[in-house]
Structure formats: structure tokens, C-alpha cells
Image 1 (cartoon, rainbow, N blue to C red):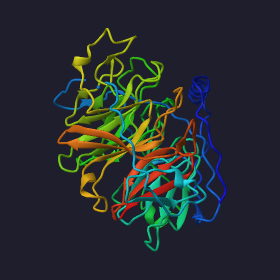
Image 2 (image 1 turned 90 degrees about the horizontal axis):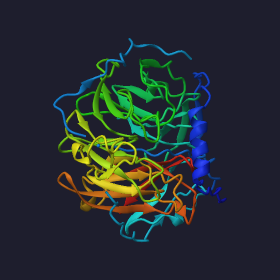
Image 3 (image 1 turned 60 degrees about the vertical axis):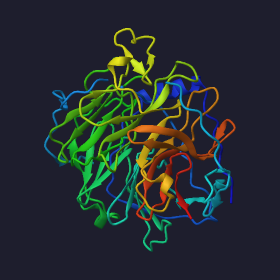
Image 4 (image 1 turned 180 degrees about the horizontal axis):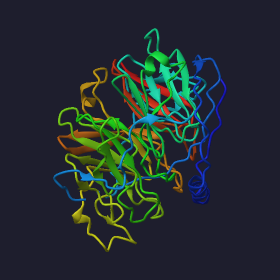
Amino acid sequence: MRSICRMRPAGWQAGLLALLMLAGCAAPTALPTTAVATAVPSATQPAATTAAPTVAPTQAPATAAATATPVPTMTPPAATAAPAPTATPMPAVPTATRVRETAGLPLQTIKLPAGFAIEVYAAGVQGARSMTLSPSGVLFVGTRDVGKLYAILDRNQDQHADEVITIAQGLDSPNGVAFRDGALYVAEINRVLRYDGIEARLNNPPAPVVVNDSFPSDALHGWKFIRFGPDGKMYVPVGAPCNICIPDARHASIFRMNPDGSGLEVFASGIRNTVGFDWHPATQELWFTDNGRDLLGDDLPPDELNRAPAAGMNFGYPYCHGGTIADPTYGTQHKCSEFTPPVQALGPHVASLGMRFYTGKMFAAQYQGQIFIAEHGSWNRSVPIGYRVTLVRLDGNKSAGYEVFAEGWLQGSSAWGRPVDVQVMPDGALLVSDDMAGVVYRISYR
């Protein structure tokens, strides 16, 4: 087992430079059609190549309206073939952690509640970010900076991946992935693609179809998380193209559209940058994370966990943060009372990304129906925070607690991993993607 490189989170100067570089990044290379299969390393093989993280924060709240708002400037084209308040203090986490497959990573540093174990489900997944699972059990994983799209297979169903296939590369931040009716949908910066019949052609994927290419091309907060809702529509967020500004109608919102890209409309607004959402398993209401703005100090504002039970709600960006904090630049224009406050204030600058309601049966009853959140970690805080998986306990539609579930990727001021997304598996285990270590973990309970 070899140790992996430890990365010290950059200071604010380096973080600002990274954002400037991101805004001027070069166009992606053409999409090849050849897939590459990779055998999954065993526990005794070296760790996967680490992908340098580039985190940007996110945030939002506003009043409810009865219906969704049409978007006049984002008319989708016909489908065509694609050219090639202060956060609640966190209680301590029990230290009883069982470690299985490690792929050369220091998993012994991860702290979990008693009875839980963590292992590497799949290694060699460079830049692993958002995940989606097909009905047949293929795990599809998107990326950002590396521009790749993966399919991960557990052929013998032993709860460990047997093969990682690179379906496509050269894409423009293909962060978002969703699966529906045999097709894989992939969100780039300004468009959504569809790979039809993908499961039968993992090693020879079809040319993607452009579903909608009318989204803004801003790189900053332009990477997307996508999912299909209970209404059958695809939900697509577009972040604010700035740290703090008054965005136009095409930004700082969650949109939804039909699977063919038609009927694009605003579902919720005043959202700085959400990169994770899910629907309550009982009420079917949308819940989402949102990243708070920067440059108000280490402890302000908090990230947010929000609930949008109806279309037309506004969550406050850029006027109000965390439900109670008026923005120093724009806060005089609107009162915080005009907007929908968060259900739970999360840690400041933790970069809360993927979230899921736990719907499995493996974990104890106290976890049923609760929310797991992947916190990617701060990029410009003087004392780093995040780099963990947290749990929000619910009492109806209200938060009953916010606590650490898994931590240890951050050691002092250095991090060796960064959680991005969470996925509940059919057996009840929880998968966690890590774009820095280039792996997908499996957390189980006995």
C-alpha cells in the first residue's frame, strides 16, 4: 500500500486565481466514440491517480407562486445527433470504524458511527462526481475537470466493482448524470446529451443526441446535477455566474423540462448554486443543497438545505443568505422575510453537494428517511471545514438535527479525499464518490 499525495487546501489568493482561470478555460476537445475498459484495482494495488479539486461555493431563498415560470430566452431545439442563520454545532462522531478494501487509501482515518464499515467499491475513477444507478445495476459516474464519463460494473454482485469503463471523454464538465427508459442523460455546461440504449453498448457507445443546448455557457457554477422528478420531468440547475451579483432569468435557478428537452421552465429561483437534490420519499417534495457566497469571512454565510414543495418559490440569492443574513451589497433592496428560509443552515463554506434521502433497509431504523449530504470541503477558509458526509435528521418537514456521519478525509489542514455525491444502493449500502482520490466508497452496516 502506498500513500497518496496529501493536498493542502489553497489560501484565498490561490482560490481566487483558480476561479479566474476557470472563467477563461479552453473549449473541450471533441468527443471520441471509443470506450475504454479498466480493470478495478484490488486492495493491494496502488491508489488511483488523484484529481486536483476545484471547488466553488453555492447558495439561495423567496416567496411561493402557484405555477412554474416559463423561460422565454431558452427555447430548446429539436433533438439532433451531437457533433463529435449560524450552523448548528456538530456532535462528535464515534470512532468505531471497520475498514475493508482500501485501494491504498488511508481509510483507517475515516470515523463512522459504531457498526458501520467503509471500503473502496471502485478505484481508478478519476474525478468521480455525480452518480446514477440504472435498473440493471450499472453505476454511471460523471466528472468535471477531467471531462470523462464512466460506467462501473459489479458483474458477480459481490458488492465490489469488477470493471470501470470510460464511455466518453473530452466532454465539457459532464458532472450531471441521470438514467431513464434505457438512456443515459449527461449534463455539460450548456447542454444536456442522451445516450440511447447505452447499457448494451458500454464498450461501443452510440453517438449522443442533443436534448437541449440552450443553457448558458458560463463556466463558473455552470456544472450541473440533473435528476428526473416524480413528475417525469428532468430538473436542471443553472448557478449564478459570479460570487455575488444580480443574475438574469437564465441563472441562479432550478429549471425543469420534458425528457425530450421541450417545455423548459423555471421551477425555483434565488438559488446561488445547487449541485445536489432529491425528492422526499413520502411527500414527493423537492429538497436541495445550496452553496453560500464567499468573501464574508470564515463563518458567514452558511450553506443551506432547502425544501421546495411547490413551483415558483424564491430562496433569496443575492439579497439574503441563510434566511437571516442580508447581503452587504444587495440586502437593502429586499428583506429576508420576503424569501423562503432554509430548513437547515449547514456549515459555512463546506461546499455541500450531493444529497439523498436514505430509502434503504440495511441501516438502523434511526436512519430511515433521513438525509445524507456530501460536503466537498472549503476552498478558501482560513481553517478548512467540510470534507465529510453529514446527516440531517428530520421531524416532518423540519430539521431535528445536523450531525457528522463520516469524517477523516481532512487531517489537520490537509485533505486526502473530498466527498462529492451519495447514492443509496439496492442492498441498502451508501456509495460516496470522491473526485480527489478518484474512487467510489461503499459504507455498510451490520
